[in-house]
Length: 88
Image (cartoon, rainbow, N blue to C red; front, top):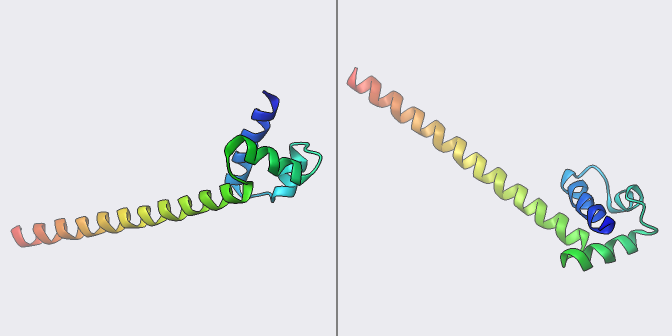
């Protein structure tokens, strides 16, 4: 139970991106970073590095989606202004 809690916390710390894996393993009181990595992979089916990479890719995708949404909203606003100027 405690191991699961610690490993869930490690996922949050990885997502935050403020600590490297050695710092995370020390913070969560693992004896070594290798022990932490083995337990992480055993619990989640991927290494901490693989998890961090997947989170990073998701961040990029979400950021790109946000940029597309902003661009669409700006274009919609321009179209509305044009429509108003033509009808008014």
